[in-house]
Length: 141
Image (tube, rainbow, N blue to C red):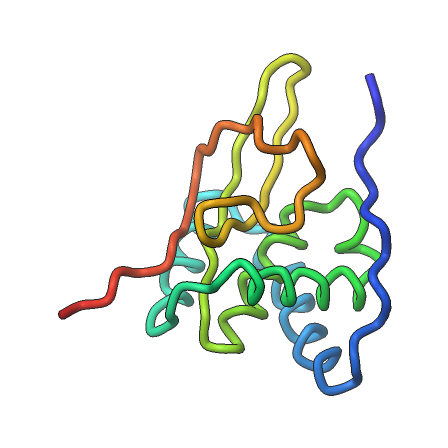
């Protein structure tokens, strides 16, 4: 069995982007400790008013998060995925936040999706079955 996946560290983003990333990362490290039910409810409330993120917007947020935080670039997928979603939200968008499992070998994982596909995930990570997700809220007409 192989060890946890450590992502390549992205180059540090510009200072202006790093400041917003630090806010999202700090909040994510606290939010990631919540029980799943509370985590889902809080993220559901935070997505209010945001438009769906495009793949490129979500990837830019994820890159800023992993370039700013060695913790999020490491094997800590819940803080990384929550920070990515929060940074998108600070920019007025919301990706789909997901968490799920796979069998053979068993593993749990958290990630974000945009435009129907996982954002910035290594090849082969699409084999997780989603257990919880917080998609963008549908616009009321």
